[in-house]
Image (cartoon, rainbow, N blue to C red; front, side, top):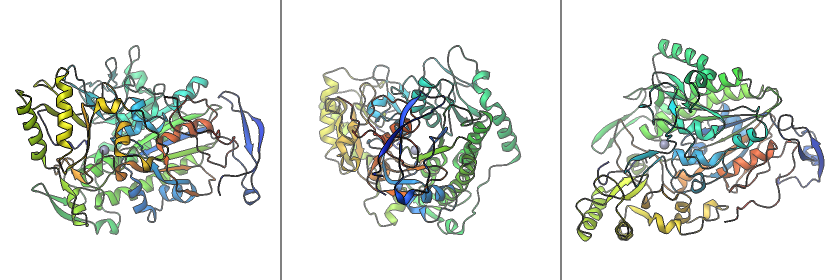
Length: 575
Ligand SMILES: [Zn+2]
């Protein structure tokens, strides 16, 4: 990492009386719960027993905007969830640095990145100058035997919060908890500390991490059969991606991005398994394999399965959100989810699905510009460099002091190690003043000043200031010296064949995500007041009768289930 570089990584609630009744929660702690009397209008809809299977689906980079855009055209699983489910179109990842690892960390912990300890996908260790991956492990190995692949050895050491699966297993050790994804951070954040996480790795199939005292063979046993079938399928079926929808074909076109031509069409120039709809289709096949072979939701105990679908994100980064590639992905994802819901509808103990996203996204800036957003542009890197040059002169330094790292800027020496204080603080504060003068910068503040401020209330996430959003993404010893955000629709870097679009900003298109609860027999309900991804964990815990620690999120009444209403007091942790 040399000096500054473009950063791309970038019915109203039933008023019926609640009648206390003891409901047997076999396998979970015996819990006193209440049944809700159905109002006359719903007298025919008998309240269901709490489901034995909880499935969390995270569609990586599935913005509320993208869901809105295709909602009327879905005909498969997303249509069923949209029509039958409890739909919150205004779901929020409340924090400012809208990346995959922090976004996934909020969903089943009920906590913001400031509390999960995952501010970004990676950060710089100020002492060593080395980059640290968000789920890096110093003690584990990768089960496929190649610690130099993927993000290196991973585990849950960096994740400072526990998940619903962890709470469940604490009271119900026989419960099974799994996570599966195209990405390690998608699987691990959903599996939590006690569950088993599997993700795809090149040339192998699904892998996982191996902790001290475990064997790779033992850890991979739950997916060994899947991997055999997957590799046979891959060998027999060359990766292809062609049009299935005329409406998508009509979106094809050529674009000039930083002097290179991008042919937005199918198949794309660089075709690979993991940037096509095949990735999600196979991830869902892996999820079905785990459902069958692990008999999830078929026993007395409640089980949990997390499924993080990575293709939407890979496609958004490589091709943008408004071309034929994303159009085909939306339709293929919708179809694959339809098959998956068919499967879940057969779960003998009932199933509940919650679908959301780790963050949103927006299109690449050249197409945004052509679509009537003249301010959409690539970052003026010269302006940032001028700040660096001015700081170097002013503080009489041998090298530029600002270096990109951890989705912000570090104040560092030539070896990327943090400069000593008070010099580091002086430079950071001077840099912030200068960065704020740049038209490409919407927000800049030092980590230390943000850390000195209280953690803001996020119960009205749409009303939060940029500063409050960024505070929720600031973690001591992990966040960079300077937290900052580019102006709306200003994109750093970009390369045809690599990443041309993405996410990561504190703006609505990156924060607003759908949150949909669906279960067989759900009757369809729309809710517009914002809820947050941190509200999912306490909601699930309440539904399955698992005691939750105090978290940022609040329980949301789903209706339809024979459980008590959520506690009336909003949960706000003491600070
Ligand atoms: Zn992404």
